[in-house]
Length: 92
Ligand code: SF4
Image 1 (cartoon, rainbow, N blue to C red):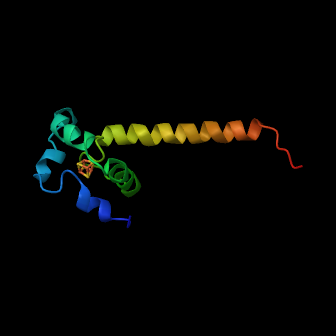
Image 2 (tube, rainbow, N blue to C red):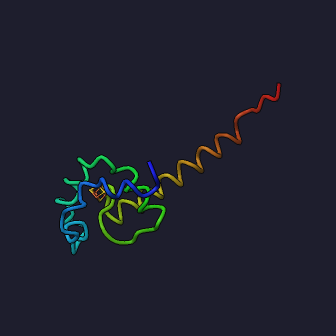
């Protein structure tokens, strides 16, 4: 898949954009329900994270949920790096 052709397959492509930019994160249920059945949910989410999107529902997650996911991934990477450091290395 080309890097941006997922956008042409989004379940939101023919819907009013306002649905995905609700006035409050608590009003994201309609967008989340659409995203839940979208075939390009993962690339959409990764695009928003990589782009640092500060507004809107992307990949079914609100801005706060994306921030929490990024923080959790960061913690997991740090934990993994720490675990790798503690593991003995066999050089053969
Ligand atoms: S995951 Fe949601 S915002 Fe992303 S393309 Fe699909 S419907 Fe649109």
